[in-house]
Image (tube, rainbow, N blue to C red):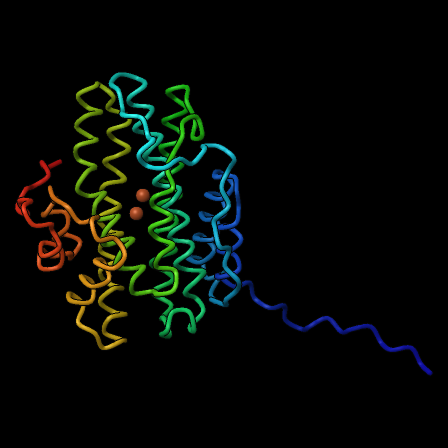
Amino acid sequence: MPAQPPCEPTATPTPPALAPRIAEALATCDPVAKCAAVRAAARDRTAGRLTEIGHCRVPGRPGRPDRPPLRPPREMARRSRGRAGRVALLHAVAHIELNAVDLALDLIARFADPEAAGVMLPDAFFDDWMAVADDEARHFMMVSGRLAALEAAYGDLPAHDGLWQAAEATTGDLLARLAVVPLVFEARGLDVTPGMIRTLEADGDNESAAILRVIYQDEIGHVAAGHRWFLAVAAMRGVDPVATWQSLVRTHVPRAVKPPFNTPARDQAGLSREYYLPLVAPGIDPSSQAPPI
Ligand SMILES: [Fe+2]
Ligand SMILES: [Fe+2]
């Protein structure tokens, strides 16, 4: 009997797909390697080398380094002033940025599967969140570079896992994830970042303040992307966006919406007061404004 011929190589190799590449970055433990993988994937996507979306298994938790140790939010030390205070502030921002990288990656990889998303998402969804992931990776690297200039590094101080835990509650629902991550957490970032910038400038640390100014501007775009896609998915499902957002936020993060608000930045991102003012707890002045940048 003649020997079987070896398997013929396929004439055209399967093009690499976005979702498996992003899931691999999500599982990467080293933050610098993770950010480099994200930035390379963003370049490939923009250059048309990663056009297939594909889908794959998504890691239950993102890969993270051994340090920093993760502690409950109440165990975080209060920040002092001076160099130690600036390092603590930048370390907290670096941790938020690394979480933001993972959250953007998770949004892409998890909801690339139309069954998980519940709708067929257009390519523009993946382009937008790939650009957000790229921004977050750039933010993490900028803040890490500044920590290095202050003779510190990400991992030197404990951090908390509250952000990821809150996001995990919305794993099964794309609309809930969009309601909570960009439109509660990232919008909250717009409220508090001008205060951080002023603190750093008052301390004479204009280099760190300049980095936070860049991040602040980019984050307005992330909230805007969140609002745009929240509206789009709400329309696909035929639900009222404002009432649905309020219901999802009450369910998943009931106490997370609180003044003072940065109304001009929220307005710029399309997140109007009709969404969030009704969620302010009774007895708290909802008109309290965060000081401008
Ligand atoms: Fe960021
Ligand atoms: Fe962001």
